[in-house]
View 1: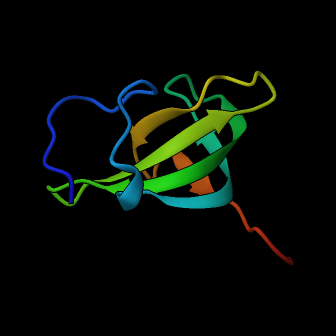
View 2 (view 1 turned 30 degrees about the horizontal axis):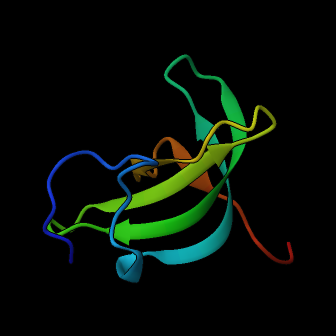
View 3 (view 1 turned 135 degrees about the vertical axis):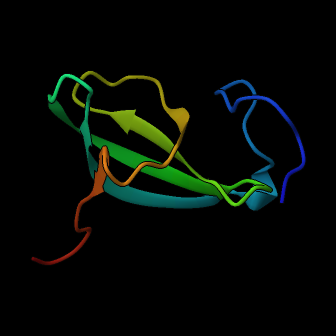
Length: 82
């Protein structure tokens, strides 16, 4: 696990060897109640055991950002078959 301090950013990502790359479609709920589709492209767990995800929302194409994973506001969608 990484021991670095400070927030994760696009310019300051976690150590590459600790990142698990994925393709995970999601729905993101904002504080105002609005929903938007998105994609998680990586997972990382910090030294404290917190799970982080590299999240990008679409269709606005926001820049991917590392966020602490919150299953209440980021819902995982199926990746195959329904």
